[in-house]
Length: 148
Image 1 (cartoon, rainbow, N blue to C red):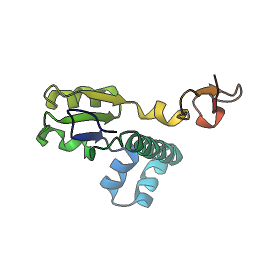
Image 2: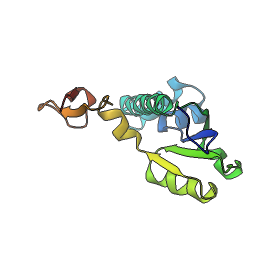
Image 3: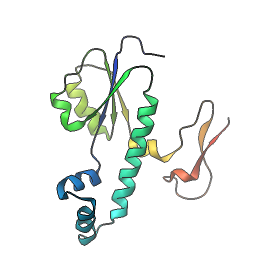
Image 4: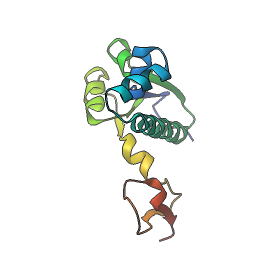
């Protein structure tokens, strides 16, 4: 199934805090040393990074509609030439949507919040995500797919 009028899906991503630290300090071990010696919780950075990667995987599978898919880091957005046949998907906070919209020249943009996409299961229709009634609402393991 293809989307009429569109030839490509451009997925705009951002680096996670962990990816930025690894880029800055060259290795994951050095990034961990820096965070822990500053009193931070490195596991939090790892959880955020893992959640973002899972969200990206979900988005990539969701946009497989017979069109080419290009993943583009937000740093490249100002120099990227969006075509009238592109549909744009951003994976990040609201600011990423607004920043991308400045350069997307009126192309349709779908914004995806990585925190919400990674927390609850994506269920096949007509099922829906249902809270199991115990534990943290933000933890995806406390949700399951349920029939209507």
